[in-house]
Amino acid sequence: MPSCIFCGETKVTKEHIWGKWAQKYLPATNEDQLKRYPHQINIINKHGQFEVGKGVFDNVGDPLSKTTKVVCNTCNNEWGSSIENDMEDAFSSIFVRHKLESNANRSTAIIRWLFQKNCLHERACPIPFNPIAPRKWKDTLEKERLQRWKSFRERNEPPKGYKFFMGLSGPRTGIGHNFVFRLKDKPAFDHNEADNMLTSCLLFLGTMQSVITNDEGVIKRLNNMPLKSKTAPIAELVFDQPFILNKVMWRREEFEDAVLSAIDQPEHKLRRNYKK
Ligand SMILES: [Zn+2]
Image (cartoon, rainbow, N blue to C red):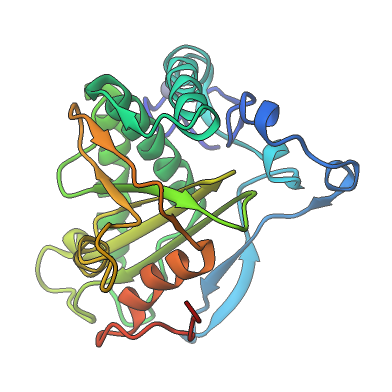
């Protein structure tokens, strides 16, 4: 029986992954509304190979109708709702009214929303099973992330080590997410294993694109963008500090590729070639 990932309460309720407000800005097409798929995720089987497994999200099809049952009523309707309300204000100001300059409160609101989504997506992904890792290793990781989700709820502030980036995407828009992880030094099960789990959560909503990550490779890559033009297509958001987004749009595919290639290509080549 799942319990609330934020407070441990054993009675959980159905929660929309994306706040309902998002439907105002991205109404689903009739076709999308009819789609219903099971949520599928990549898992590693006991032979160490990738295979498709069942995820925890429901109503997958139109992303906005996607729900999950891992949060209790209070965390969903009180704490969660205030996070969604603040984010709706920020989203409509930046991505609908195109005010790219934001104050410290707005930055804090966006970071809370991003990290809350990061927790839900992290919960949806099982810790990778490694056949040679001791059971203790998996338990440590599980305990560590549960601790992190709870401490976020208590302090209303994301833990240290996570960075938040945001920018404008184009021309392709829409809604989407991608949660990827890797182990820092594998296999290293003999020291503080929990520190070894690096995750990156990419979120797309309309022309908003963002990533929440504790992966130094990804952070370095994004801090060094752009390589050629003068202005960075992605801005780092810092808790309680104002920020300015660049009006330069970064193609969604290219942004996604920059993050993924920082993870799997140490020499930092992009996976695909892009014509400027
Ligand atoms: Zn709760």
